[in-house]
Length: 292
Image 1 (cartoon, rainbow, N blue to C red):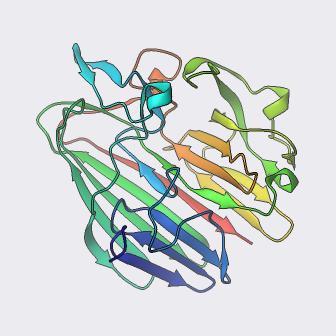
Image 2 (tube, rainbow, N blue to C red):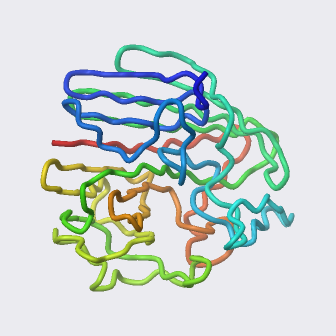
């Protein structure tokens, strides 16, 4: 049996994708047989959050601690070197299969209360491929009896022979300044010249582990042009943040749509992006991938 359970394949025309049962990882996106992702084999376990959906929060929470409704909550520390709670609670469990057709898979999971997380949140995750590429829809509902904080992100890595040679266009006007040791927020500032890719230019030696916000349009597109193919990651107003991360090996770049920035559950420069879901409230986030 595969460590990530069943492997749900979907396809239409030139496009195929593969989603796992365990963790609902986006394990593969192919166009004309070309794999777009830096990913993992079916008989392996994912590393470095490959293709992981990050909920009920993306990125990191300082010391795993936050205050909500005048109550202090303490999450498990999952990023020990930086003493943070990293990338939410979606790890290691099987998602229920709602439906699986040729070009679409729908999965569902209920996040029940646990240490540091007080709510009951039902998440429905839809991956769909069409002639236009991959589209992902994340619908969550607070099925508990108390309000909860919420955020979503996703962690796909896009593979290239050498990231230095990739041309990047990133239509965001602000970036998050963070401290060097723990990568926790200091302030949101206009994008610096070194990371201003609003006009397309080669990545070169630029290193990213950077969150950006304030997109220049209600639907934004981050465009990566390599020597053999182009990848476009798009999002709408439901995901007004994106995190870019370049692997030290310079063989892949993560482009991570997010509803909020790091540490949004706590007061600070990203707090306005935190979503509060009252009982019965829902939220939908939408993003996708195109390639040529």
